[in-house]
Amino acid sequence: MSATTAVRRVGHRLHSRLHYRVRRYGVEGVCLLLGLAIVIWSLTPIYNMWLIALSLHGDIFSGDLWPSNPSLESFRVVIYEDFWYLARFWHQFGNSFYVGLMVTFLTLFIGSLASFTVGRMRLRNGWMLTNAALMTYVIPASFLAIPIYRIMQIYGLGDHLVSVIMALTTFATPYAIFIFSQYGKSIPMELDESARIDGANPWQIYFRIYLPLMSPALVAVGTYALLLAWNEYLYNFLLLSSPESMTVAVALAQFLNSDESPWNYMMATAIIYALPPIILYYGFRRHMAAGLTMGGVKG
Amino acid sequence: MSVTQQAIAVGQGFARPRPVRRAWFSGIHGADYVWAIAFALPYAAIFFAFVVYPIAFGLWMGSDPALYDELFADPRYLTAVVNTLLYVGIGVNLKMFLAFLLSGFFMRKRWWSKALLVIFILPWATPALPAYMSIHWFLNGQWGMLNNILYTLFGIDGPVYLNEHWMGLGANISAYIWKTLPFWTIILLAGRMSVPQELYEAAEVDGATGLRRFAHITVPMLANLYLVCTLLDMVFALGDFNATYFVSGGGPAMSTEVLATLGIRYAFTVALPRLGVAAVMSALPLLIPLVILLMRKLRMSEGQL
Image (cartoon, rainbow over all chains, first blue to last red; front, side, top):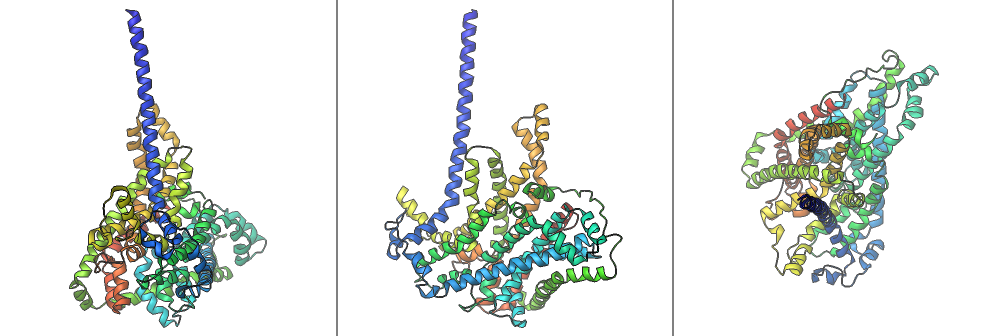
């Protein structure tokens, strides 16, 4: 009798172990499936871009799921500016860089000054400044596009890169102030005080003490501003109209003006346009940690 | 400053007792006051020149009541209002829910989960314009990749997605979700990681199982972060121009326009800037409560700002 119980017990144990294993592999399998679904979901539009860019013009409409005659022809056309939409491509690429760097610089400069005066010097009524920044952060940029377009005409900045730089700086700075104020709290006030006792004026404290200690936040916000400026479309499109002043985003969207456009050239342009921000993003992902949390790039 | 600290800073609904910090000695005066004002001046200048002035200008442009009669008489406007509500309501909430679930998925440590996260981020790292353009061609009815796949695998001819109102709107919303899901997943992942492990251990000692730990620890700890993220993304979605403009292009026959694109369309395609401003301003009843709520939430979470 005891033998049968023992057998039953062993059987039970085996059974439950089997059950456990089935369950574990089941869960593992479901997770793998979900992971696979995530990969497909994330990569399909990206793959589509490459598929079209690597196809010859005649092959785009063939319905193939991979390029039958993969060719770098469309990249060659973009790089050598061999198509009339792309006649000033590298110049426009330079424009995009120029706008991005200027927006980054101005955002860091204006944002750090503002957060310094509010957070460190305790400017009376400084809360008004932070509230103004917060309000700007939560107003959708596209809602201000029409009046800003008109105002840039009034300022005489129509079709001038400065107009885009100023508009984008306006929308990037609030986030900078937000991050700088938070980060600045980790820098002890005693540093400022001792510098003052040594006779430093506020500018010296800002430049020699505050900025160097803020460098991690500066990197995070700088990356954010650069990406925002590079990726932005609406303001670039509204404020810049001539091929000379256009940025790549506007030049790229020009392909949509005509139904006859060579889509493979368009996708090759899109890939070349997308590469710098992707490289920057993955390169600075660790530093962007701070930037990630609140940095929904404003649409 | 790590993601975690940031996320928890946003996530904490209650105001943390802010350490009283001395200002420079006792307040600022004299030359220092001039410095302080000078430092505040650049931001004040761009705020007045590029925020206050445009807002005032916009309010003035859209102040004529006749504009709104014209607006409400336009069926395309009413469609755009419905689309905007669906876009914001479904797009944001569905995405935040998915992001919440996915953040739990990414919490499970596996050898491949890091690599998966790198791939998963790619849509967010890609600029909106190329991504949405690609999705537009992906959905093309005649030779888009989606219908090619359907034909190759199942031998069926897929529909012309962007030629139909509901599918077009669905495409825009899906594209928006595709683009921004990674970002919010990572925020919520950071929030989940910042929940103190001791809470889970204590719950385990008390005999709480997976589901109850989820319901009584994870959910309450993340509730506020989730709410702030949802509100913030509602504002972003309300102002989102790119997805609609590049995926469906507002078509067919302007039936998938949202207010952000309709305003631009009125102002620059039809050359009725005042009507465009009025269209955008009609979103204020939705935007203002959101903005007030958000400003409160964000300020509460971090003393100032």
